[in-house]
Image 1 (cartoon, rainbow, N blue to C red):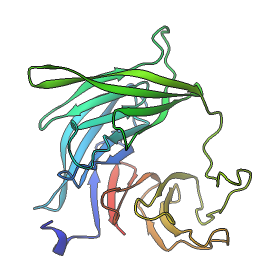
Image 2 (image 1 turned 120 degrees about the vertical axis):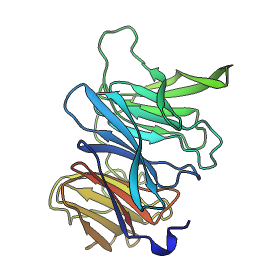
Image 3 (image 1 turned 90 degrees about the vertical axis):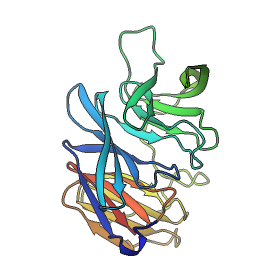
Length: 272
C-alpha cells in the first residue's frame, strides 16, 4: 500500500454524534473501511461508513444512512475474497441487512422473528458465520438465540434480492457470557485486574490465541499476553490512554497490526 512507508501510528475520525457500535470491513479492496453506529437516546439514529483516504491520510465519510434506535452491533459480511454482495448487518429492534453501493446504502431485508406481536424484544448482539456467510445468529433480551438463513432470490434487472428465514431458535441464555475454560467451567482461567473502571469491550487477537485487548471507562485500551495462564498475569504488554471513556474495541481480522477504538464522538485506529 502506498501509505506504508509514511504511515502514522494513529488515525482519528470525529463523527457528529457519540459512537458506540463499529466494525472493520474485511473485503480485500476495502482495507481501511469501517462502519460506525450512533448512540442517540431517541428513535432516529445513524450509521456511517468511513474509509481512510490514502492520499490525504484522513478518514472520509463515504455514506450515512438512517437507522431506527442505536445499533447494538454492526458487522460486515465476512467475505475476505470479495465474492459476495457487499452487505452490512445491524442489530437493534430487529436484524437488518443492508446492501452497500458506491453512492448509497439500501435496506435489503428486515428479519423479524416475532410477527404475531406488536412488541419486539430488542437484539443485544449477533454474529455472522465465517464459513457460511448465508447464516447469522442473533441474541435477544427475551433470552432466545435465533439462527437466520439468508438466500439470494431471483434476479430483477441486475440486482439479486436478499431475503431471510428462521432456521433455528434456542431458549438459550440468562446470564452475561463469562470467559471460561469449558473443561473447568466453574473457575475463571485468569483475571486481568488493571482497569480502574467498567470494562466495555474485549477483542481477541485474530492472529494469536494468547493476546487479547480490553477497553474500559478508565480511558485505557490494554493488550495482554495470556500465554502464561494459569499463572497470574500482572500487567499488560501495551497500554494506550484515550481522551475519553472507551465504548468499544475491534481488532482488524485481516490486518492484525491495527486496532480500532471509539470514545465520545471519536473513532481511532491504532497500529500495535
